[in-house]
Length: 209
Image 1: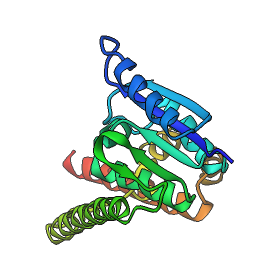
Image 2: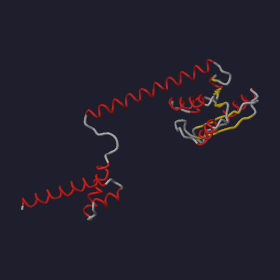
Image 3: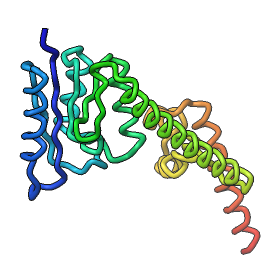
Image 4: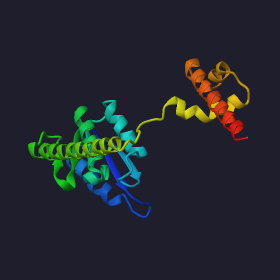
């Protein structure tokens, strides 16, 4: 039974042509007797991870409708090593072979050399991800040591101005809580603080007079 083959072509701009890739890959498929071939073509930068027809190809892979993915070179699939490794891992997870004729990569026949190449790419990408994680964690640690608060602001901080405005409009804590979707206990505490601050300011002004 002839395998189900998905061929992916990509160029970066409208001024470029897919034709040279198509001719070579058509000849390759014919030589190997692959008759069930679907073509997926994108005109987009390789740095762009989400591409219409690449996404469609991956959907075929996930649904078990492809046995082999063929592309002219690995950089037609992805420019970033991490993205390429993720694509390769997905193909491996679904037991889909990868063939890149111009680079001698062919896992459709269980070639140890081709599999070794892909494993090296995956290992390097994993190392790159770990380095990025280490740098991010180191930056967070330094920021915290400097007293920088990270993460989303607390609910009180996010709604402080809105609560103050609604208090001035005469709304009660219960009404404010319902309007903003904040627990009554939180709003009540904020309202008490706002009123206490207002009273302190008024007292200070009275003293000055």
